[in-house]
Image (cartoon, rainbow, N blue to C red):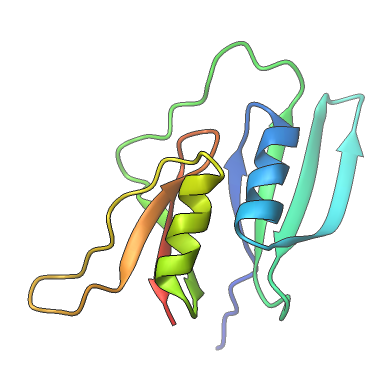
Length: 126
């Protein structure tokens, strides 16, 4: 039996801020949007050029307080050819970024950038 990854859902406080981050900072494109005004939520799906996997942004209308990310979730990850240029670009855009780092005994090949809701996104050298 074969399984295929489809999407990861994250809940967001401000849909426009989140869309700006995922589109402008990470180059993802909106693939689908479903509005449910009666139930007071919107789902927006974003993907890379290949479109094989999506991030689902769930926006519940008028959330009262920020979501708790929890202590089990860690991050999502994307790859990029020019790691240093990507990090500098994210810094210039005003997003929180870490230093470039590596696993113990391995090359320095990734950093993290934080989205508007506090979710960490790992950027890995392709």
